[in-house]
Length: 342
Image (tube, rainbow, N blue to C red; front, side):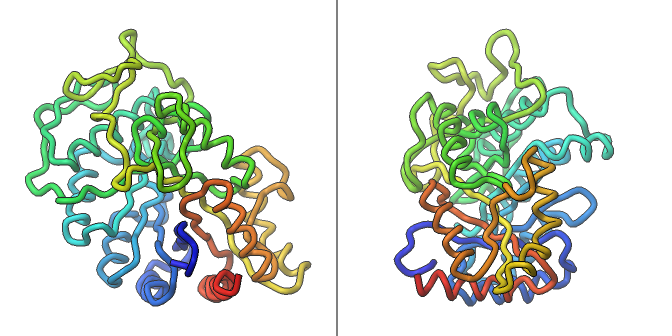
């Protein structure tokens, strides 16, 4: 943790890096002030659970975040088994992100579902219940389980976050998850709007500052429920008619908001613009904005550090840096020096 900063700082192991470089990457970060390393599960690149297991095994301090596993590709029982196993072997060092998955990828993999929103909600609810050691029977629209439980549940279940960005998904995250993962391209203003929607999912209350409270839900093409308000676990329903699990919050009583942002540190503005252009264009296409409107931690070390501070100030409890280029740790070390000095 950066001295004097209560928020978290993470670094993503980019999907385009050689998988075998994960070990030295994680060991380097484990020796710094960085709080987290995040691994991804983009279709065709690498599996997040195996990456997380490797990262946890070769480090001793740092938290490992999964950002994210697509719900259509992960049976909730098997996912809970994997997460529970990691959490038992590495207590308090895992954060698990689950999302809709890129819909075109899900279609190409033969895993597209009629309602991604419903699947995400029911998956998060089932995984959280299983990780708590509950016996789960549910007859949902997307998830159906009959008396399933983990034989070796973790003593401390890892937090489950929803990786989402649309309005209905953000409300869902606030209602059923313990945190929300926002993708690259969310600047301070957009974070503020996301926090309002997350808070609305948590029974209409404003989302507290990082480290306080809140609950979560999800986004998809339809977002509709069944005529009775939706299937649920073990017959339990909240007073607002929505599904929930005992009104539980995250382990610290709060709803973590983790924000991904690209990182590139350089002193030549023209070179920086050239280096970040492909990432800016990809982010802009994804979010439907102009490339020059895609916020990044880019520029001099001081400029990059200021962007991170702005994200923290806007309500990001965790900022996850996604370094651009083939030598990511150079950029990480430079921004860490600037954050220390600031």
